[in-house]
Image (cartoon, rainbow, N blue to C red; front, side, top):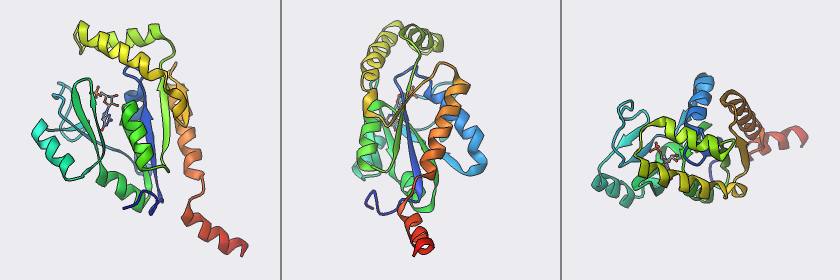
Length: 208
Ligand code: 5GP
């Protein structure tokens, strides 16, 4: 399917460096809009499952061999290596939202965001920034899920990624989670109100 042949759905790319806060923000948005049919794109990953995660909720956890198989079948809209593990965005859920309508939120790293935007130019990309480097360091540390070395790698990478903010459609500074959630929510609502080709037919009828 060409990326522009169906445009009734809305693809929202949420990206941030590690520690930017996009996971909590995405969770908030989904809680607010579950009844409106907003969905989350559940990625496939080779990363080991964390204790609080569930298969098919945060991710589909697969072996490297299984991941390679899915990729070779062309079933990923994009895939990337992040912190030594593979992550891929399934193509089918994005395409069904494109056809059927609704909103799909994608929580991907910066490289993944650029790849999705290239494949689906009608998507909106939103970059979430932590309010400062000090806060970024604090957030990364407070997760307690990484070794000191992994933490250093994540921090360096986050700082490099933050420099790419201009390539996103919007940048939101996540100083306060509730305020940032409201801001992203309003960006998505205005994105939803943007005209699409199916609207033009209706508008043509009104003015014609
Ligand atoms: P975590 O392992 O901490 O859940 O996620 C690590 C990073 O991988 C995060 O920046 C997350 O947004 C990113 N990520 C999750 N799923 C995907 C995906 O399907 N594609 C890409 N490119 N990045 C992903």
